[in-house]
Amino acid sequence: GCGGIMTAPPGGTVTSPNYPDSYNNDATCEWTITVAEGSMVLLTFESFHLEDGYDFLTIYDGGSDSAAELKSLTGEVPVDPIASTSNQMFVRFTSDDIETAQGFQFYYA
Image (cartoon, rainbow, N blue to C red; front, side, top):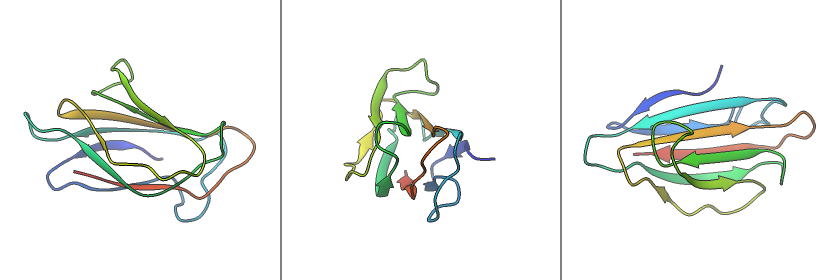
């Protein structure tokens, strides 16, 4: 499986399945990241490469996908650090049934 409940401190690293090898088709992974009350979640990307327009990493400004969407990422792009406005962030990775790519690695704190 993939995804999970992450907390900071201490923070840590999140990767797509099989990283640095290619992720699987038809994957869905969901992470909820929580930091100390009064702090904000910060994601810093080490690498990012998804099938452009078909596989997505979507980042929400809260503890679920009912929160406001901060960013929807696809393709092979440099990603600037992404911060929440609260102490929680929800991240979902989805891939379709055709092509795959190397995926992503980011740090959360």
